[in-house]
Length: 331
Ligand code: BTN
Image (cartoon, rainbow, N blue to C red):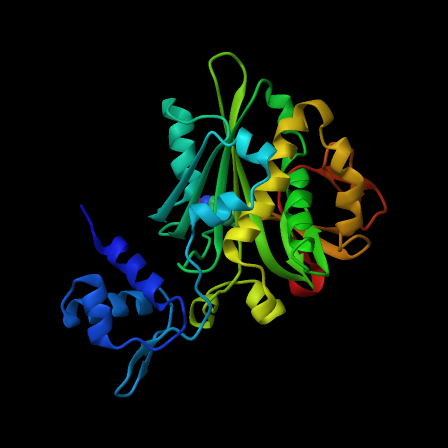
């Protein structure tokens, strides 16, 4: 068994107050030698978290760290949300919270309403086969497993989830939140979060769906250099006023779980108008990337089924169900 993530988590917890801690104090608190502490500090550095050594005094973490705390999270969940959560699994480190729940969905050990959170992900996954940067200590990596009686209920679900997440961010005093089709969460054209929905069929025709969400609260700059598009995190937007990690997770679940409960009845129709008000790129010249295919057009609208409607250069309208939208000037 690998104990490293646990030691790392305990060290991160000790440093999360952003105060200076001497090497001796950390070693005593963790029950480790000072060289073992030093090794764990190096591990944090490798994950992109800089730990400042303050000469003669010890170490301090210069950026925000907040551990995932089940009690604090629970405290902010609405009773109706709590009732629908069948289990709340919190892990220091997983490959991917989506993979974790998809495996459980496939082998029959998962349950509808199972929520999985990780402090960090070793192989976080984004849409279109991309990876998702997932350092520990600040961001949100959340997945929810849900069961639908019919595959058809999935239509437009990812758009509706985007609205739920935007609501939670607005409730956390974030202004200028927008959505990019199908489900990127933007702030002033910069990517703040993303949603990855995956599904697997069941023997009786229904389906199990995993709704994965990543929100950037704090991305260490040296790691973020690897991102190939304009990005942002809540710390850069709101500074010290950014929402607490556990509170924001609870707010997201308070929006997302009722959405999942009502979705088979209401469908996208209940969310479409709000999605359209958040649709920032309407009327802009865009390129839709579908693998090797690059489709240019003006972003016209979203159909009632949640498809993207583009006006092509010859003036005709076309609907698309997948792809990645970029502004033409930045594609
Ligand atoms: C995107 O490409 O915009 C979607 C990103 C989704 C990332 C989240 S983080 C939690 C969950 N687990 C994963 O591996 N991916 C999703």
